[in-house]
Length: 114
Image (tube, rainbow, N blue to C red; front, side, top):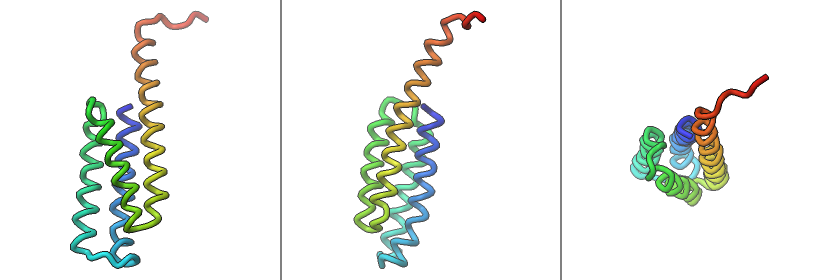
């Protein structure tokens, strides 16, 4: 789960940073608002990527997904992009847990004969 979750969050941080100029130029948001807000969200995503294996990281990750989707109120395309990343976050959690369980269960079992 660590690799998948961290990858999703890191890529999402890059997209958030790239949305800052869109908010300023296309949507007319003040740079004094867009830059700090986008930077804080991107930094939170990167920091969470570091701690993705902690028990509290998944709920915090979902909260950040909601915040990312809500940036669509400022840059409408972020509704779609944020939704895609929320879906990817859910897939990363599901597949990561399955892989972790398989690795934990598989380490105790002998290799298949053949």
